[in-house]
Length: 98
Image (tube, rainbow, N blue to C red; front, side, top):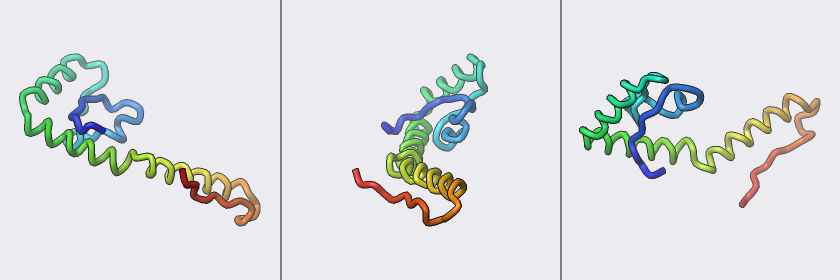
């Protein structure tokens, strides 16, 4: 979470994390020319690098922190238990302190 501007391709989960022009630059997969162009663009534009880097760091802190991930997985477990258990009170998932 160093706050660096990044260039990536919209494949797999990267498309959910990297938003073109907001927290990084997105290029077409397997396009060396597009990748080189995006890198040149970042190298030549310090304000853009700084803006994208700050936005990337804020996104990571807000959406990818251990606390957020833990809450996400607790919700997944709650839903799975609710769907698989006949009684809603049969199992309870609670917060664990580390």
